[in-house]
Length: 255
Image (cartoon, rainbow, N blue to C red):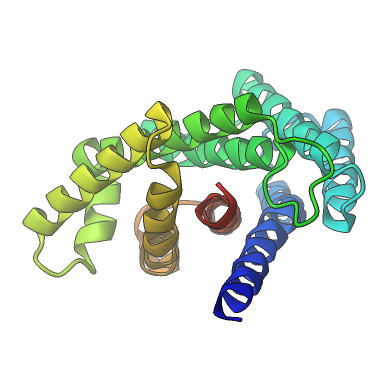
């Protein structure tokens, strides 16, 4: 009876992770539209030229809708990963908006992690009634993307004064605690990149991310007013972190 109850709880948590990961593209699209509307008022261009932007948003909503309803979820999760990669590349080479190096690391590392989450979902993770064997190669690739994201997190704790300050504002113990967190992110990154103790590392990451989401990314006053990050760009990054949390929960329960 206890085993059955534990299994049901794990299934419930797994479904919660899938829910967060499959719904986050809707938030990406909404926050992106709000960001570009904000820029239009200031007569600034969006990251992607307007004709292609509509195709990009349409594809994102289409893939997310099929993922959410569980229709060919593996295929549409892979499609979402490809769509996000292509749109990020197009925005980067377009050169319409120039971001600071520290902001680029924050933005692109989260996108890489979300792509990794979609690849993990495309591998068959999170399926309660699995009819096909999981693609371990796809899952391993997704785990590597999450490892790259954690390396970027560790890097920013050492080399980005903006990120360092955002953590020091709430971390008890100051600099020593920050260095402990740096080592922890580095160890978690090695675990995801090597493929060892992935489930345990995902459980640790799933515990850490809500604090980072609420206390670091959620500090809108610091990022928007002090560091001049566009409000809806920061909201988009918050949504990306929610998706990463969903991927971590998925690996923690069904890795």
